[in-house]
Image (tube, rainbow, N blue to C red):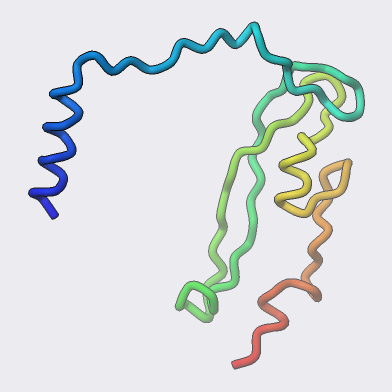
Length: 107
């Protein structure tokens, strides 16, 4: 494994002419809020409760934080984050305690 890693490093070092493509971000469209059209976002934190049973600790619930993007004008959570985390437009969770995977787990 170490030999393979060394070969990869050597190959990368020997290719001094390789350059990353130059990308001009002004040439591409900005992501917009789907409610107000604003293009500025701030980060916020979402925290999910993961059942301990899924992590090997049946009596402990694990908290998993993650960043999401929120419109800086109207406070709407970015659509892709709402869909991924199953949130409503106003940021409420659509997964309730009675429908969570923990309650459907059969042991």
